Image 1 (cartoon, rainbow, N blue to C red):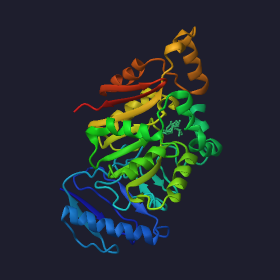
Image 2: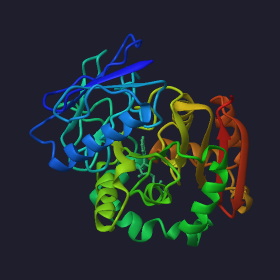
Image 3: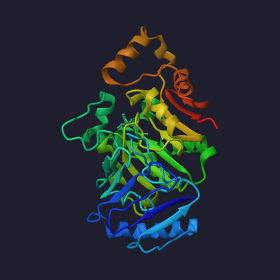
Image 4: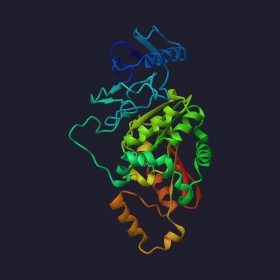
Amino acid sequence: MKTVVGNLCSPFLLSQLGNSRPCLLKLRTSAASPLFKRSFAAAIKVRAAAYSAVVGVEPTEPVVVQNDGISSNNILACPICYDPFSSSGDPGLSVASVSGSSFQCRTCKKTYFGNETHIDLTTASGAKDYGESKPVSTEMFRTPLVSYLYERGWRQSFTVWGGFPGPEKEFELIKDFLKPVLGGGNIIDASCGSGMFSRLFAKSGLFSLVVALDYSENMLKECYGFIQQEDNFPKENMILVRADISRLPFATSSVDAVHAGAAIHCWPSPSSAVAEISRVLRPGGVFVATTFILDGPFSLIPFQRKIAQRTKQMSGNQLFTSESELQDICQACGLVGFTKVRNGRFVMISATKPI
Ligand SMILES: C[S@@+](CC[C@H](N)C(=O)[O-])C[C@H]1O[C@@H](n2cnc3c(N)ncnc32)[C@H](O)[C@@H]1O
């Protein structure tokens, strides 16, 4: 049995009895909107009913909820310690409620803050003088211009020159690969960009929680903007998180599915990233990703391997020249059951965390 204790009026403690290293979740109450308080209260009631264990459901009173397991929405963890922030999830966490929330890790005491659009769960968040610079393939997407253009033509161009099938078809293919884990679990849309697929995941109703994750603050702002423009968008089952793919802020073995669209070639270290994905996936959890393969006529280019190496050094972009490279990364990082579909330069791959 696990126990959660909370009080909305003051910074509150979510502690997990039986967990030797619980974490604090705090709300800056001045910033907590009535909407947040209402959704929190409603969620507490639902959860309390679901777990049938209660000591008070009024939002102004301490609340005790007991449950028998870790919720699939309870996956956020300190990116430094990897300790979960709470034992049964933040019942009020949603696109709307992130603003003004904060999380404190009980182990390292670091506090992470949510702003209007997302929670910053990078290790360097809060650093005042230190500014970290990543390779061009990451930094480029942090600019307001590229973030703005991304879903206004940039992404669509992948269909023209890269063989990508277009968002609707791509989404159908993703769902096919995700079949083993469909049924109300959680999904991380890793390197979500402006959240084209995160939004489709949320609207599909197939997941209890969708985490739209990217390193680019501006991409996350774009994603938030698109969400705000949509009527009746299901904001309650989605959150936007800023994080580095090589340091994922999720508890080990807590994630049902990770999707990474057109991103693996942009990551500074694809193997460190896939290793992280492998760490956070639960046994049986599925990783689905798309990227480009430069084979066929491209393999006739002399010194192809050297060119790929140089490109990586200069831009950070990984040029994959065969599908077996992707299979190799997955296998090296402990994922099994590699499968793929190809169309021209486009490839969609999937692999599974062994049970
Ligand atoms: C080409 S976009 C893909 C966006 C979206 N997934 C899609 O399917 O269109 C690549 C994304 O990778 C993100 N990215 C690059 N380096 C990253 C890193 N180290 N950690 C997390 N995301 C990163 C960029 O910010 C960018 O949004």
